[in-house]
Length: 390
Image (cartoon, rainbow, N blue to C red; front, side, top):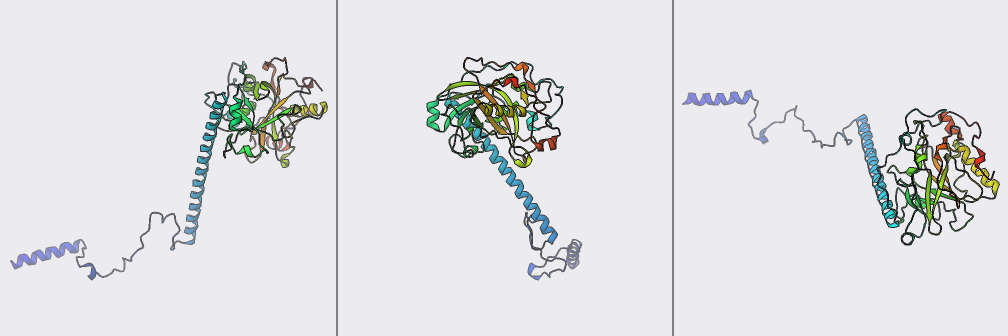
């Protein structure tokens, strides 16, 4: 039995030695020089600066945290914008329903030459087929807005503006300045989309106020003045004026004057900052001091227009100006696309001969545009016989 006992003890010691197992109580164990106690690090140790980090490591982690903060802020801002845009569109649709002018069901897609602007100063048009082959103008239906309900909702309302067959179907309000409705909706709530408004300089009750100037955001959702941008000629196509030729008119209705049709006659790119060249003042010209003042204003517009039409003009005509943002030189260069139309005269046909409309490749543009895109202005090429009072 002694031999068996010694053998079992030796076998056990052999097994413990082989696998380096220490069976002593924890209180009797001696610390090993190779087993220093380490501070347990959390899952964020690789991101958050630690007391034992080197200077370079702390700098790396600080930059990483800054990048993460910027990313989170950017995503939050984009989410806020998206929510605001959707809310603005829904508000706009609700107002249209209240007005009795429901929004058409359209799947909006921004034109490629607007989303990715290219050099529009060229000598010839493109060679692609037109976006659509049927260039028959849309047929307008007079606006019949419910003014009593709209006035009860917001007494600032002045008009309703519409381009048939598009999402441009909006109430027009007027504030005491040109700032408030840039970021407030029809109900006065803060909104990234704002709403369509006229300049505070317009006097809607004065018959001598001959130029109603409207502003609206160019929303990627298609709401407000996004469709004004569709009148920018698309030079990739053999017919760069496709949208104009199918939508040559704008409708505007007022509580006192009813629904009227306006014939579009020009579209320009306007600079807003003097350091980039001439700033054409279209935002304050609500009335005209005589025939010469009117004629000179129209000539200034037509010299800058990116297209010509068969629409004639004369002193006494009522004008409609629609302005929105457009950035062909990048968003850091604050420019506008401005559309001009004139009211159909009493007894005049509302039809427009769009077959004679043509692209103007000699439009007058501000200096910085030429510096970036090339080209220059070589003088007026507009047919001034279209200005009947000239």
